[in-house]
Image (tube, rainbow, N blue to C red; front, side):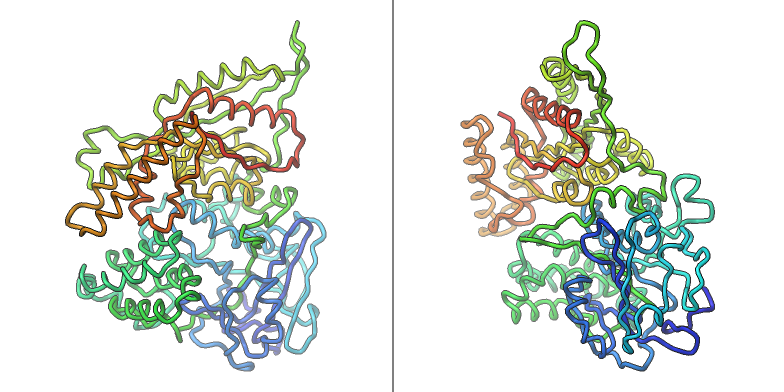
Length: 610
């Protein structure tokens, strides 16, 4: 660790800095990246700062994007529970599931980019806000422009310049993942890179990953060390959990359940840190029913042997650098212009190309009258386990969204392309499964893909590595239209996006609901299941009667009467499609890509099988 910084604060010479904020901005960035000095966080994700910083409350909330802030640290004392010379990048606690991880990590990517990649951007500017109002001349600077990929500054002469030691926060489930898991490999693409790593291709460095149990006090560690069966009986938390789920926002119920299941079943997850996610999930529910939800939450914490709500426990860092993804009218916006996105440190430091591909347009062939164009189409399928394996599986409905007859889909796309009158269109169609592939192999497929046709599932997270203005056609199971990949395509990867709705799989949905709502679950659960199956069949018949219309009569991803298993069962459907209708959608995306200039406005559309 460098000698210019003395724990637990940053300093220039003999001047110590307790608090302060630096904003960094560059061309194409939607909101500034903010670096805060002497930052503490609590287990319920509250940022705790020195009292004097209250004067910058508006800046911190509306520009820096801090949702929960407390100004309670002393103004002239080191913060307690110091975590060492560690610089936090992003305040989102990263989840392990790939689509959720990509959504969570985007603000951190902006922070890494400002710290390690600002030299690649135009119009870099900064402003500093200190207690004395001295501005950036009297502020302990990170040299954003000259900082190398290793985290060590190249040149520059400010007396307060110091090296950066990045860290990110993650939920305990990530601790259990194999070292070659996708999200772990992804984090190794981030700075600081190992010596020589960036120049040779993938950086293979990455930030320090911190888990809640590593940061919070003895009480949380004692809970982790206890017998995992001693306070996690199936009956103790179930009533509290039922009330918790009833009060929670239905769209987030799966995340709540996953968090509580972590606490119930994983020893590593019983370090108190799972509480980090639940307050986030329940924030809206707290506003609706603050007394009841808070009481249930605190009761559940006590039963699980964790600290009460994590309140009062602090983990403090030398600094925190945070990026912001703004929301307008309830929807996340693009954080970067295409030009800035293409220079993001995630891509440039790993020799990945994000710039739009120039379509291979050519003059008409001999005797032809229309231009030629060549593109790569990747059809991404999901492996369907053998029937014998399904029969032995604990949950035979955990596997779904396989595209049957995928070779017929390929032939239909080729036929549609050959018949299109606008272009002499040549499509190189590749059929792929990502199961068993490394992250490098998946990224290579995405870098070569112009149009991605893929089943709804975690594999579509790799669309982040497609080149700007490429196209994503997501095959969605009937009645389940989660927007996570639409959001990724339009706001994070700058792709064109189309959702194609598969044919209803009534039998699979009904069998799955019956399996997960047996008579032993009680009459109310069985009645709810039967009602949802009835509604599903009615919506499916309407879909078929209108030849692919009436697609949104049932939307189980947001339906207030649908429980966790209803969404699981919706996702267990196979993705049978009308090959000719899907081919039309794919060819339309390909033609648009051939004919449109970079910077085209992305358009979202739904299409369905008839």
